[in-house]
Image (cartoon, rainbow, N blue to C red; front, side, top):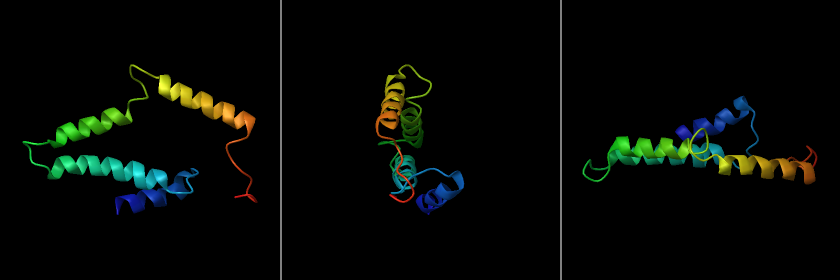
Length: 93
């Protein structure tokens, strides 16, 4: 239900995600990681560790020790946009 709700937010937030990757993989992965900590035995994995790991992965690119992957992604996207464009026209879509 959470993934479905996240997919429905796509139209409200007006971002381009033709395959619903953000709603399914980002939200589903985050919820899956956190719920693993909820349902796992405390001897194996605590919720706090899961939430900490998930938030660390999410905030890895901004602001933290290394911003290189984030900056390089922006550079690659900028070059690609200038060379061939990131979006297709409505007719091609």
